[in-house]
Length: 435
Image (tube, rainbow, N blue to C red; front, top):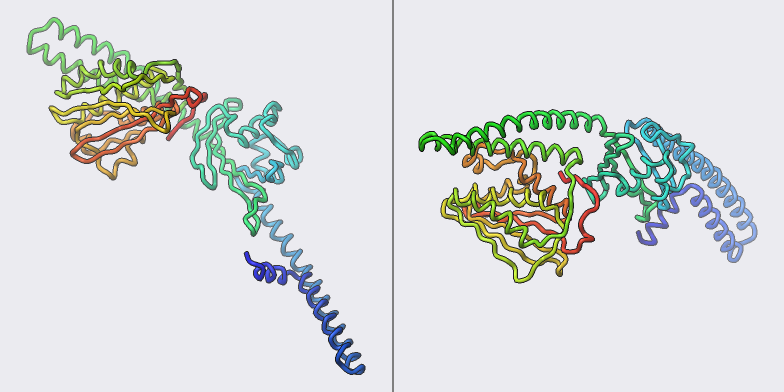
């Protein structure tokens, strides 16, 4: 805003307008006193003072109207804030609370009088009554946090154990006409009922999956027994039964893992490991599947070892998912290649899994890591599948402090890549859910 714009804004204020008239009148009197006749000056003085009086009266009336309008607007704003269904908290740049509506009082079990003017800090979490409120102000202190948006407004979801709450918080900056921060507005939505409904659904899936897994394992064992003792024709059918049992068990296990991820029970047991040796172990198991599909599986070992902090079981699930997809949706006689490359100045290592398969349509790449998504060309090749494998893989990789990406060309193949931190300090210390 330039000087002239600022002057015009100042001039519009009632009190400033009256002062401006007074100064202008004084200037006119000085000029008239210096150059005009005495009689004319006297008449001019009377007119000027009458004009000043009128201006002052008008300025006072305008100022009163301005104050009344401001109070009315403030009252309307307060009424809107107070009767919103979501909790509203306004605080200044020093984290001192200036507004706390009725929904906030009910959600945090605190009275407005208790928190008005209160300056909050992470250390305030030691006070039991403020614990939930402080977790909303400082989400990293919550047991589970999911970042929805890092821009403006900043949106996060947090899950609190005691009391059992799932909250979505949206924070935006309040600025003056010059863009200078005056404070912050935080709107907190209680998603606990949605969480309870999701938990009920998840619990149902967990129970159903557990109930299915035991008899499926028994059926698989029966097929394996028949396959080992029967004649050629029966053996072939029994082997198909084993393969189908394995597929169904895989779907059941995916459902269980997805339920654990959503409930925050999909924990990690990190340990130091040699990445090349870990990949060799997983690739050795996948090679059996690759051979049955007539696919050549290669691991290009790096020239030097990479020490990483991983959960071998969990990361094994992620890498196996990528390898199984690369093998299953490949062309007979095709290949799958695994290689490593150092990233970001040696802070990360990238694992690439490249195949020569059917590829993924461009319009489906953005949804490839979402729950239950399966590309149509993949469904045509392999009707059975949970659509959860890549969703689980993404959460496992990001739970290790890495990122996962995909590049694909339809009919020519796909490359999945994920990174792992080489610095152990970059491995997350708490569980975060990624949608």
